[in-house]
Length: 91
Image (cartoon, rainbow, N blue to C red; front, side, top):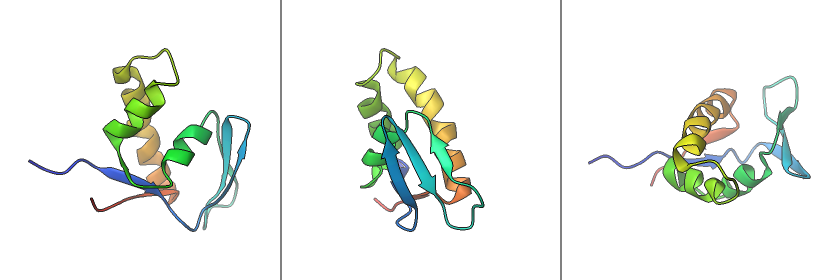
């Protein structure tokens, strides 16, 4: 059985929380990235978390089902990884 993917934020990313949003300054990206409603996710990513754990923690803050949160979270993490904002972490 394989280990679940674990994610953490890239330590080189500068960021600020603005209300419920997070604004990221990602190295090698020309523009800041605004994560609408992403402050909670970005706070969780301070330490490595499995995708399922992130979905569960974020799901507690919304009326969406765990499956709905997970379905939105996976592509978001993939895109953030492409941009260099997050990285996979060893378990």
